[in-house]
Length: 383
Image 1 (cartoon, rainbow, N blue to C red):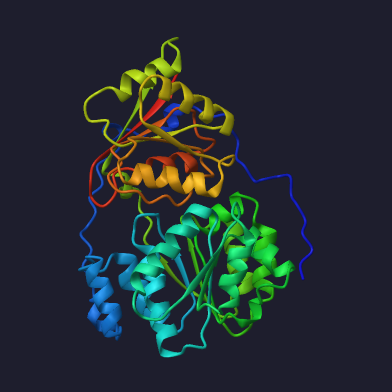
Image 2: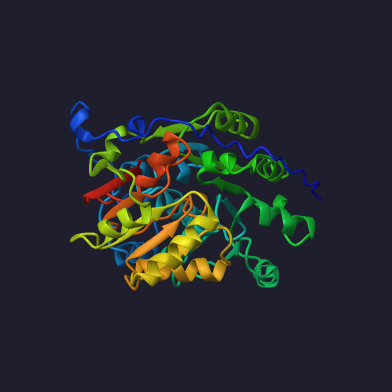
């Protein structure tokens, strides 16, 4: 069905930059006052079923976030939507809730959701299962790193939702195990990250065989020319753009640099990790090999540590995430690619053990802390 072509240029950005440009300490920035957003809707306004409302309440969702308040009515009315929002703004529920109602009202509807990483696809699937409990809605998750046979069996059950990464979805299409022409709705989450990771050809091939007309929703942290081109190519009518991006999302994060001054970096990291308050720490490194060595060294020093990177199997990555989320380990090591879309509560510190490759990657990294109106600290190690 598809002819695969591989692009050696993974669209990575220039690595040479001044770290002082990255660390925008709040003391050096003009104070930004963000007006409090007042929702114009409540969950009860959307005609959700009694069971869906019960599931929303069970999740302790009491009020709508801005992206939910503006996106849910549009998707319910069948509009195409472009949502510009950072992670942690409630965007997953913003597209899942109206699409669950769409499926409940017409069981012939099928929804395809594409995400850049296994972890993000898994989180979307978990959210879907939570919101659709006891509603007879089934999903299939199609990601690499695990056996394809179980995914094929899930697809054979004709699920209403299919959530996957572009590469594995293409693999399944080549084996004729998934028919994209049956999907009436498509959601692309973190489109900019999928492009950064080299998925542009897979994305465009999948989108090109989806039926028309269809409902489309694109979510991205940035609206680059490449993202805009994807939208323009595959949306027949002008979509409605909802922008919830704001620099003030960083207002809960204290940023600083830690100078190593010739000291071995792991010694500097050790000295940080033993300080009071470093209760749940996400450490970013650049390479899989470097992170694995760091994990071994920290374990030998007595730290409870887990790691996620491309050389880990999917089960290993899921176990590491679970241990960190459930506070069985207090330190998680991650590469940028492996960490895309991570949504973990109560991360007290983000430490850039290795410098990120761009300012965008820096913002993505430090945004793992200071979430849900809590305070967080981001530290970057520099010579």
